[in-house]
Length: 541
Image 1: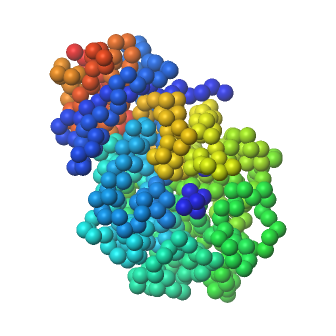
Image 2: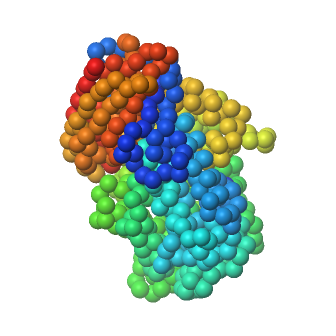
Image 3: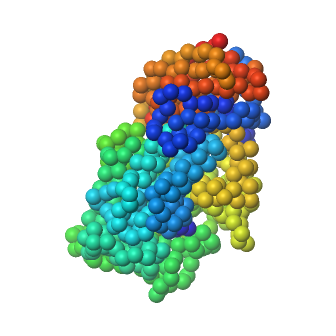
């Protein structure tokens, strides 16, 4: 739904951030904005209710904190199609600066809305949601994905590239499919389904197209993750035609209304004629399973540090549900066997879209959360999707407190160490004060992304560190940061330790004084792309 709407003892809060100014060697050529090539990345005096004191600081706080940025139908970015590149870049920077100020550490950017691209590709056309016309390149030329990656990394944030695996044309599209769109180059694999065009998962060429597109991005771009959403086979629509999808959130059962069957009879008949023995539903699930396994294996062969995440619909298969849980079955309707993907380790993180309130019994947030934790026998990351955009002006609106409380529920479970907000628009607009509340109560300071030890656990070497008095604070010189993407810094102000994270490309940072109180010592470690942390080193005046 992150796309179709265009998911005990509490873990201590992260400590307040030390105020940091960038020095020479800042990562990335910025646009002159704070946080890109320097500037404040934390304000002095941001102290959480839990303060850390003592001779040594605690372990670095760990939590994946992300937001989806939808490009389909211009839900989040760019705000309108065909904006000039300078405006699109300014909007991207505003999103990243808001995310950084909120102490998020990742963005999940939709790069393939509907068999199209928001980056230059030889495999699929430019998206109309970027340039106003499918197949039309930006003028002047630029690479939006490269820009997002560079600007995210310059702020010490991850960038995960989000792909819709099968959708070929969205109902919000207004311009014709271009000559190089798959509906024209391989029309035999594209089906019309209601107001959408869909690549048939039963067609090998359709699955290969998606795999090729994803691996092309993995090879060419310095992304931190590949992400796919909840669209496998399409959400059913009522026969003979409706839009479909949104009703799944509110469905109390799988419904008795007649549904339009997905038109995949040609592929199904070939499967049967070739000796296939599965029933049709199992065959459809097998088609999706084969693509999931191929994506995971393909990413591993290309770049070991790029994580693969999936954000399925949040309710599990009917035969495994906890008592009292009701609703739409992705297993039977989308042919998505998310439990199997977890069981087989075909992903690095699962972000089930838990888009219901804590107190809504048929889809109770805590019960669904515990269900997915129970399915996670291989210890992958569970980073649920939160329906933050449900804070709106409708009768079904969430309160801001609902989202804050959902974060608290997740932190009360020992095996949940992250979450993703759908979508960034709600945080940009600070709907009903949700951004302010999250910053004050949930995210008072930065956090590192949790490590993924099954992908590699070798720690980078310890950095070197030296300190000296600077006119406005403590200058920290950093060195020997090979194999690191970030540097974690604990700074001691008086008796209190404060935490911050900077990109590893910086050779010096300045910890500014706080109302005349100077940082007097630091503890520093290097962190690699998989979240592995080096031994700590310390320095003091």
